[in-house]
Length: 251
Image (cartoon, rainbow, N blue to C red; front, side, top):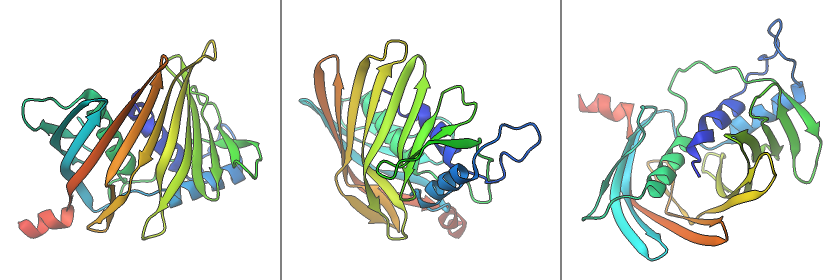
């Protein structure tokens, strides 16, 4: 299932402005809800704004099939990463999708970009154990999310006739004190019937620090759908980050 479908929405939800609901005629939100969302935005790990591109090698294994290749992504550029397979094999769409999602979640806003106002939100359930459940007011995708200990730990949404929940179960703290979601599940249901249709368990297996940036050493995705289970693993190597400063120095 395409995680890239909800990247932009989640980023928008946590890129908050505490005065977003002060405009005349705008739906009213809760100041405490906005403050919690703002805190989750501050603690979320993304790469440095100076990073303009990332590239590297990868090797994948998926239930008896395997392959390898390279990728390169110019951040904030339409079209996503480019992939080159090694040998005669092709890079599976699932692998491309996963690497693209990884990069999309860690891509920061462009340097100097204006901060987008966040939609108003309200707390619908106070829960010390699981985190406050926060609803986005007037959202057609019926978005709710939980924030606990300053971190986004759950996202719920309806898209394309399906409802999904993302539950983050583990975080890795970065050297600068931000939090990288290192283990999480994504569960999908048919919205009209409530029947569970698919579940994926994502696990990050270690991190490398490259030029001060975090990048996974390997990842594993276990998918359960229609009574079948598949396991995808991706190992990464020779990761390189490019910065605007490097381009300027090269001129």
